[in-house]
Amino acid sequence: MRVLLLKFIMLFVAQSILAQIPNTDIYILEFDRKRDGKIKLGKPLNFTPNKGYDNQATFSFKSDKIFYTSIPEGEEKSDIYLYDIASQETIQLTATDSTSEYSPVPMMDRIHFSVVRVEEDDSTQRMWQFPLPGVEEAPQLLLENTAPVGYYTWYNEQDLAMFVLGEPMNLQLATAGDTSSFWAAGHIGRCIQAVPGTSNTISFVHKLSEENWLIKEINSKDLNTETITATLPGSEDYCWTPEGEILMGNNGKLYLWSAASGTSSAIIWREIADFNETPLQDFYRIAMSPDGKYITLVVNVKEEEK
Image (cartoon, rainbow, N blue to C red; front, side):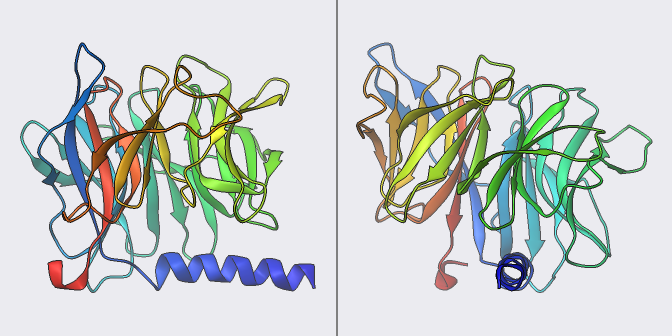
């Protein structure tokens, strides 16, 4: 029974990714922190206005470009694109006919980016690296025996943490080039982040029950886990600011949490923006540039808006 259930989960996730592709757009906004502590967001710019799936935005180390995943309307395979903030130009980084690439992240060697690749069999999901433009090199498999990977983050130059599909969904840690990974936590959400100012600490959402979700951090050295704060109700997507704060959305509003405004036993989030009655009201995924000057929001697009 457990084997059948696991196969069903994997099939459901694969179908969700490959067959039931939502219409999504990515918006970029300036993030202006005033001296008095107030935050002002700039005018939203939709840099992926085409129909189809545009998602999983990640900033470059210099905060000047954005990697993202795209599936144009009418197509089934995903590829990776790169948007230049200053020029507002976009280039395509991958053009693979028999595979799909998701979740692009620039690697710390500054000449590669990593992806979750859905391979030729349309079901195997493993970690790969691709060269950046100007680097003549073939794509390379990073972790041979770790699958199926859903999402991930690099927390230093060689080590990564992954959301791995299974029963339950679990957090696994690995070093690039190793043959496999090791289990670190179970019952986790899809959003995994490196904690700012550390080289071996990862944050994740621990789903204790349907209603009790906590953002926790885990030390990769000793696997010691501590609670940071409770999530907003039903929300699991978040990002860190360079100052060590957390951004999270809920019901069309953007909130900020910081250690100064809350404790691990309380939900104390400060509302900083209300996007209801705007094209951004159905946003969920959030990313912030390393310099803290921009954020991106992934928005579910209503059919009549496209």
